[in-house]
Length: 102
Image 1 (tube, helix red, strand yellow):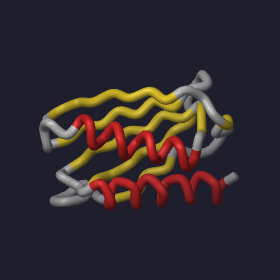
Image 2: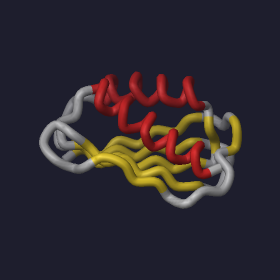
Image 3: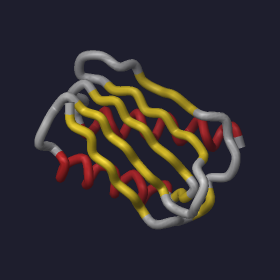
C-alpha cells in the first residue's frame, strides 16, 4: 500500500454539503470520498495498492482541480488499481453529487 498526499491552492469555495462517497473498492476500481474542509485549499489523500504511480496521480488530480477548481474540499481515494480514466470518472461522479446537492 502506498499513501500519496496532494494539495491544490484554493479556487471557488465548495461550501457546505453532506459527505459524498462514490465507487466500489475492488479489483480495478476505487472509492472516492468528498468532504467539506476548513481552509481555502483542496487536499487529496490517495491510498493505492499500485506503487510507483505518483506522477500519474499528480497529473490526474491536477486535471480534476483545473476542471472543478474547488477549495475547502477534502478528497480521500482508496484505489485498487484503477486506470486514470476510471479515477477521472469517479471524481466527476462525486462532483456531480456535490453540485446536485447545492
